[in-house]
Length: 330
Picture 1: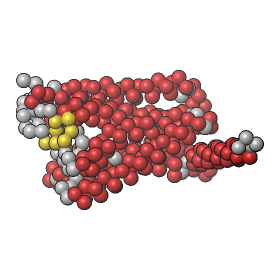
Picture 2: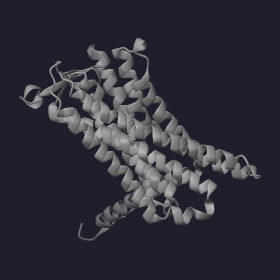
Picture 3: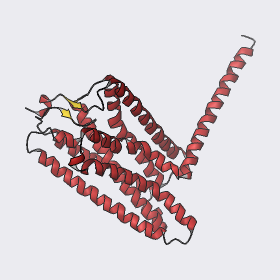
Picture 4: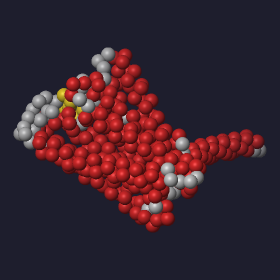
């Protein structure tokens, strides 16, 4: 008998059993989700609408914003719905979809962050070759490779995980469906196949990490030799946001999966899961816009254009109404 016919739904771990706190969590997560939608939406609009931002760095930033929106939209809406309606249930198909999309967006984002490190390396260490190495076609191919590798990785892990027979109940000790917690429900040694797949993914992730570290060692060695203080400041201002995003992404993920078992507890696991699945997509737009004057200017211009268009529409509507009011036929 397949595990799908045995288990029709999973029970997610609630943040609290107190109704008032559930509503408080709903309001908190709603605020975080709206902030993430606004921040990443502004980056998407600013990069798409301003030709000065049609460069490789901002093209990759646009892709990062898309992945962040997908990542936070995979986990948070279901958590908010469960908190609002006081339920823990998620369907078997919904759980599989959460695993597929979460692994997809996380994997693609990590690949994209690696590509962005390469972009900064070429821009600072090989500026004369920047146009040839990072042309529009090359950028599109690298972005497609990040999205494609993330999707293939997600399909492989999801197929492996949900082909396992599950006989340890249907309670998932996390607020969303996560592979490691679903493997705990397996009742056979077949889970070792997925463990080997996870180990291979970890090895690839480590290779990406080594590449990022190597890139920044080269970048800092070049920047520190720059004679101009203004040049050093400009180089650091384009690298530090990416470095901060990578550090946040890796530190939360590493702590979530490599923390000592002695300090592990359901409440701590919940808090750490929020840190690595919700916090980065929400704060990445803030990190990238803090020191980036071009992006700030583009966002301000976007607001100005939107406000100007609204005022013009308002004036046209008032003029139209006044004309109709003053016409002889009225």
